[in-house]
Length: 251
Image (cartoon, rainbow, N blue to C red; front, side, top):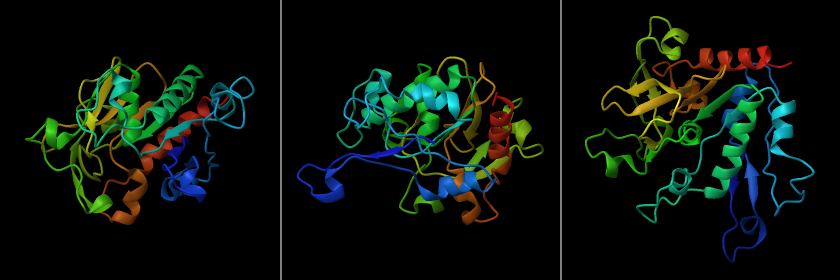
């Protein structure tokens, strides 16, 4: 699992003055619910305790079975050759570079990748796609994709004909998911298929890279669904498919 990164606050003392790498508990427990071990992959850089020539992200891709990209900070517009249109959403370029390299190494190793929220957007950017920097600003007619209710906010999605998600959830072409994002896929990256769209406004909610066994991103947070109630999509088939491919590509 990729790491979230807390960057030092200027002038802060203690841990708030340090770089922290961490994972959100519920996403780890979601994966562990299928009796698999979860490892967080730290960044490897010149500022770290180890030099990149000693341990590389490629080594993690070689020895681990799959990659889950966590949600978190915005993707930096610089990562898709744009400038931030507001100081409020500069994104995290440091994390982008780390996760883009990590994504590339796992794909090169033939290992499956599942991206959640930011992870979905990052997969799109990795293949040359762009993002709406702020849905409310860039698409004024769109519905609300984030509000003060956080993971209790939800909306409908639709699985297109022939999509992998439509096959994964047979007989269920429409579903309810949580929605905690103000950015979204704008221009679709190369070799990506649209796997789900928002029912009310057509905003892309899931993508799949079609030139690999399993590289998929979903815009919602499946790890929050069980606690959110029976109305929300049961994402167990999504997790099980990811883990099945991880086992199949293990050796």
